[in-house]
Image (cartoon, rainbow, N blue to C red; front, side, top):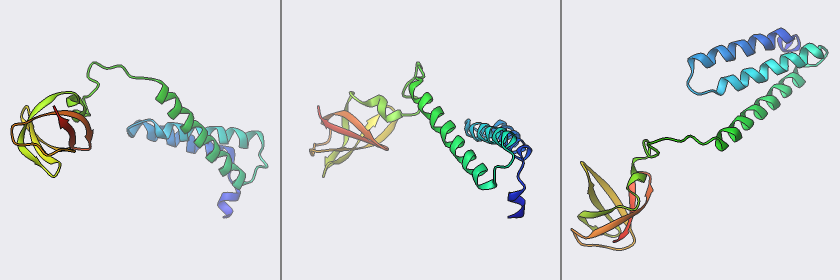
Length: 148
């Protein structure tokens, strides 16, 4: 506790530099915003040196939350245009396509062959082997289908 009561502005600046340095070695940009909050907290402590450690931590937490939430909002608004929008969402590229059942759908479940892969499917109706189904959605690794 004694250590916490002796927190000075330069402690926060060292934490800010450390967090921003860790950002270089970590994926994403999360530590950057915590480092920014630590830097702002150091500035507040420099301007008001009589600030106790509880208030310092509160300032750090508030600015951390503000910076993280602000960046999340900004990233949501910023769209990334790509020529391969389904690159990491493979199942979604099959929505709207029609396939032939590899196995009969029994109790709403079956399999289809897509290129070189067999996919599990789920639908409302049972269908015989060889029937045509249309992909309407994706639930994890299961394609949702209906009769074509």
